[in-house]
Image (cartoon, rainbow, N blue to C red; front, side, top):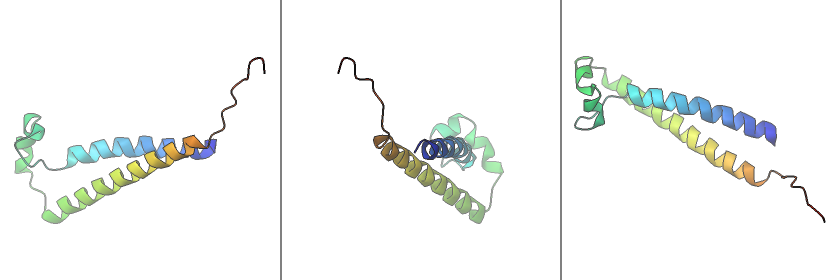
Length: 89
């Protein structure tokens, strides 16, 4: 069970970093934090609609994988037997 948890933790770390990068690559809709951090400057770098849709799909997929791994890790934590010492019993 510990091997599964280690694999899930690795996937969670990788998908977390990848999700941050993908979210930052997404085109801002305007009027929010994306404009405050220079999102308005990237409007001259117009990407095609297909590329933007694929980036949104990839971002969504990575976040879903991340959420499923978090849930699986939480469930696997319930089945780990902790060998707590019983003092005096």
